[in-house]
Image (cartoon, rainbow, N blue to C red):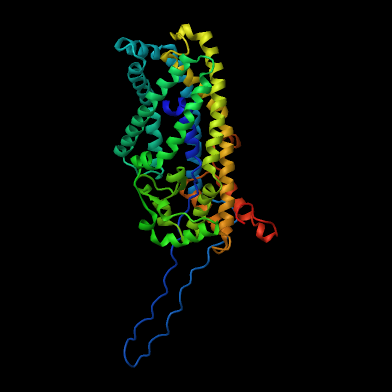
Length: 460
């Protein structure tokens, strides 16, 4: 089950949707070719030196034609895939069951009563009620979160210590409280003031709030969890090749907007993403990616990220998320009122403006979020596919055999993250923010409009 801040505040759900637009393209640099052997030194003056040994030339790597895993990697990918599927289903069921149990034991009304004994002021009550409820959910969800971290460490995908992991957990809980207390107080204030139209008025409030969160996240929130440095300073050899890609795309992104994230302190995987809006908009490359990849593969990854940048995916995601949020608010009000009319008395909830109604709104939002997951996932996959197209088009002519370079990045992504080659279609439909790796690799090899006399879709 998601945390309160993620489950309840639809504005935060939209933020998470936009963050999911960050690419998952990963790759690893090929092993260096062996050096040529040096000629042997002459044994004596009368013995002529042997002829210089012929240079040892590494055989070219076979062309990638499809996504494949070695038997060892396939075994790990299969086991990890099935484990994640079980965790997803368990998390889903546990989330619903937990909220129903909290409703039947009247936990929220108990916290509400305690807050009302302390003060008659609604905001002071929120200062007491919200932390109690958020921390209760966090504690109840802690075992599953710890198991997920254990799983990542067991497969070598995470190298983060438990101390660091708990530290991040505490930071996340703190952010949830800082955001959640005023937002939940504001929500219930709007519900009391306008019982029929609160969903629209609160949605209007979330619009500037959401824009603010997206704007400040790269400079305020992200540095709380990871270290960032100038890409030019950390990986100077990448700057000119990446600038060649951006010029091909018709852009001139300042070097001050290119960053390296010290991901290697916590994970072993690769990633890059676009984040922020306006003055905080930037492209971030994980240090694992910059360190391990060949320059051509890094250029393709950068081209993919430029696709998000050029095609305004952050703004499109913002508009899509806000539209979906308004629909969910409208439906949520109707369903919550129906639940309260049927079971409100049994749950000890006075009305929808009662702080005790928070788990009802959470339950309704969980139901709507589950129903809306395929829509959100499909939209995200569409944006990622367009970014793949942009990456292929912008690197064509800049790197040799750009289709193979893209295929290599997807192959290495799968190997590094143990990506299962043939995930269940329903699972993909409901949860995948990116097309499956096998599909992305196949598309990279088949997309070549320049060979068919057709115009490019994005890079003219």
